[in-house]
Amino acid sequence: MKHILFCVLLVFSSLTMTNWSAAQEPMRLEPDDKPLIIQTLNSSSELQVEIADDDEKRMRGLMFRTDLPQNSAMLFVFERPRMITMWMRNTPLPLDMLFLDEQGIVKNIHKNAQPFSESLISSGIEASFVVELHAGDSDRLGIQKGDKVLHKRVCGACK
Image (tube, rainbow, N blue to C red; front, side, top):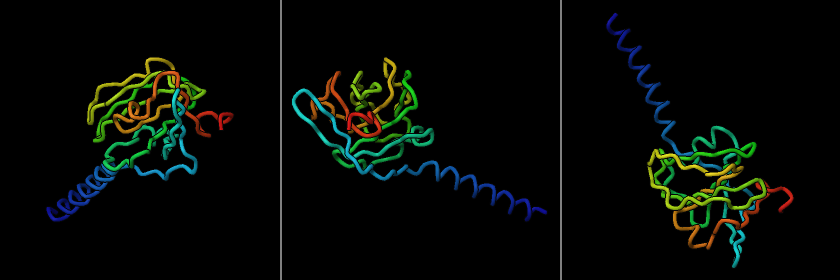
């Protein structure tokens, strides 16, 4: 009887550890076939982009990722404009976040979100999209409120 109970506990522990371990794995999305374009007052920049467009992808985002390539971003797509809150839980990379309206206009920028922080980061206004970039990229690319982000998922008419 003790042997059976031990085996049951071993199997249960194994399954629990497997599920916990899988939850710790970073999500890797295929880069979209079209770049994300950021138009500033003085320039235009193209970034390779991964798209988080459902609840699971938005929830996991860049958690556990240590390898976001340079000139890359993750685009979070929401179904409708709303107040958006993000956080850096389980996210080892410092990030800049761009909050966009339905037309892809940058309405708010949060710079240098701290790795692993559970502090909430608010869009401050209703937004439809969030772009996460490496910390410092918004300054490096000269991105400011009012600039425009173009991508087929952000504004279909903006192609």
